[in-house]
Image (tube, rainbow, N blue to C red; front, side):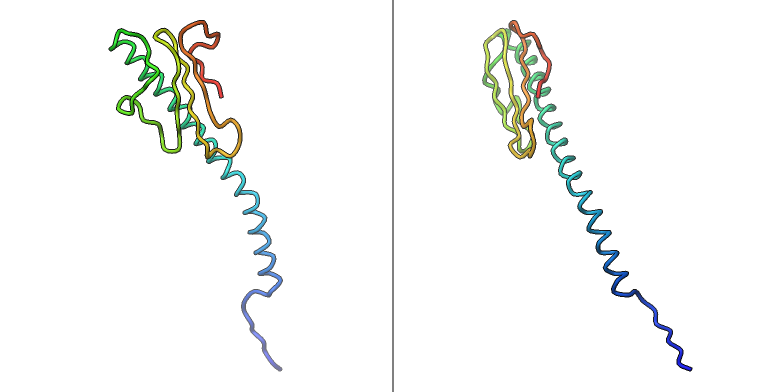
Length: 124
């Protein structure tokens, strides 16, 4: 009588494991990409809040109103973000954009002062 005492996995068992890992990866990768976009959008909103703080500091220090030219010494955006500020001494509109976000919105805007109905509220 021959005793076969083989230990290990069969080819079918290994293929089943590979298929299961593939299914899990197919589910996890899109969720990871969406999480990256949410983090980038959060950095866009944070930069807008920082611009608002810098503008208010300039407004109170300069006594000349808001500025549409925030120097990089006053405000530097997060990595990957770009910003524009337009306006006058009594109001401004700031927009921060991150082009590497894969879904919309890629930018957020805030308007402060003037006759803006959404004064100080960030909209994306």
